Each structure stands twice: as structure tokens, then as C-alpha cells.
Amino acid sequence: MAVFTDSGIQFDYTFDSIITGQQPQPNMAGRCTVVLNTALSTFRASVRATALSNNPAEINHGRWRAGFIQEIQSSCRIGHYHKDVRTEHRLWGVPATFGAPGSSIRDSSGGEEPYDGHSADLVHGQPVGMQSEDDPALELPLELVIDDVSRTLTGVTGGDRFTIWLAATRDAAPKRLVILGRIEWRVNWRAVVSGNRNTAMIPLTQLVAHEPAELGIAAAFGHGPLPAGFPQDLTDIEGQDLFYRITFFRGIEINRNEIDIDPAEPSAAMAQFPVMRAEASPWW
Image 1 (cartoon, rainbow, N blue to C red):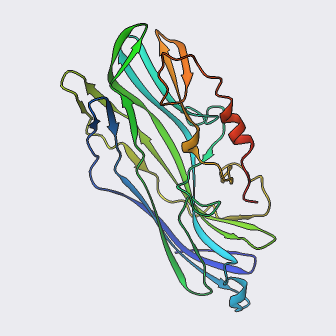
Image 2 (image 1 turned 120 degrees about the horizontal axis):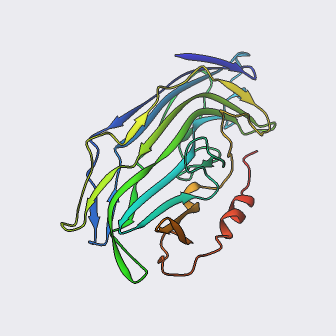
Image 3 (image 1 turned 45 degrees about the horizontal axis):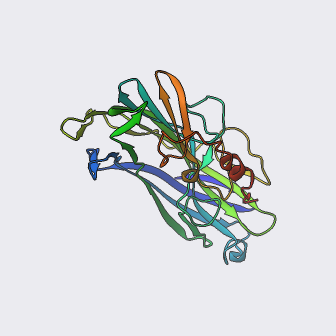
């Protein structure tokens, strides 16, 4: 169990993760698309907050919460089509590979900000358990018509990299963010697709990998921005809303559009995506 003290509060906490079950085999959706699922990633934590003044009111009554903050650090999901076509599912403004230019984005299933949808009120002196689960999925069309020729999906590559933080927050003014630990994890998309049999085959390598929990990074912050290595997007925006697809033919980009738009349609300016990011409301 790790310990961190801030604002007169002692936090005693644990944080770990597991990958549950076998890697699911891809499945065909209506004989038109292939869906790649991942094994379930589960993140578990326990937090006990104790007011050093022994005054429960400093913690109770919704003043302090704990939960998980998740960001997508990089993302690019690539479909390879025969002949001479590839697609890239990307997130607006997010690096295609870790360390490339761009910025991370909040990954959330709803719930109270800045958390990913999994948080709980803290109670003076009592441990509070919490759990967050994630199983990214990728759906790609089995065929694309490019230049009046049907192109068949033959493989999938690419990867996503995530960071999930265990955090505590004081919602009462002045707001306070306490980062207790983090886990880096990733999905390596790998598939070989056989269009003739309408089946898909995946190598036996595990697509999901978790790094050990880091508990030595505990730090507390007032109003952002936060330094590198800590959450960068504490807003109400969600990454799922910013996916788009680039289509390449013989290595040249021919279309950039929302994922569900036919690549034969004219490329969109995608102007709504930067606007969405610019209009995001900060938790602070």
C-alpha cells in the first residue's frame, strides 16, 4: 500500500490491473465488416482518505472523490486492402504513434469529470474500492470500392496507447487534483483476413499489454496546466467523438472523412473536429 499526503489529507491506496480471458477471435458483422475485439482490461484500486485534523467534514459530504482518469496518448488503426489501398482510423489531433506531434485526449464513458466514468465519494477513514474496465474494438469494412474497383481487406495493423491514472479530487473551491499513480497500457492491432472464406484469423500474440502500476509519481496540483507525465485533457470532450478515416490509394491520400462516410464521397474539411476540441469545457 502506498501513502501520499496533501492538503491535510493522508491517502492510503492500492492500484493494479489484470487482463481477463483469452483474446477473442474476430467476427463478421453481417458479412460486410470484420470486428476485432480485445480481451477485457480491468483496473482496480482502493483509496482511504484520512483527515490529519481528524475532522471528517474535510473529506465527507462530496468534498473529495477518487476515481480513474484515462487518456489516449496515440492511436492509428490501419486496414490493408488488395490492391494498393490502405485506410487509417485516426483521432483528431492525437499522435498516430507515441511521441509524434499532437496531444492526448480524454477517454471516457461518461460520468463526472474529470474521471472516465468510474469514481466514488471518499469518506474519512474508510477505504473505498473502485474498478474500471475497457475493451477497445475495431470495425472495418471487408470491401471498399476505389477507382471503380472493389478492394478486399487482407490485414490490420496499428496500435493505441493509453494511460489510466488513479486520482483524487476536491470539487469544492479551490479545486485540487491529486494524482496517486498511473498505468500505461496499449493495444497492438494485428489481424490477417481471408476474404474468400469470409473469416478472419489473428496471430496468437496477445493484443493487449499493461505496464506495472507506477505509484512513485504521486503529486498534487491546483489550476492547470499540468506538467508532462500527468493528465493533459481534463475537459468534457471524449475521444470517441473525434475518430475519422483517411483513405490512401497507391500511397496517395484520396479521402479524409468521418468513419461511416463512403470513401468515394468528396473529402470533408473535418472542420467540426478542431471546433469541438476548442469548445471543450475544462474541469477546472
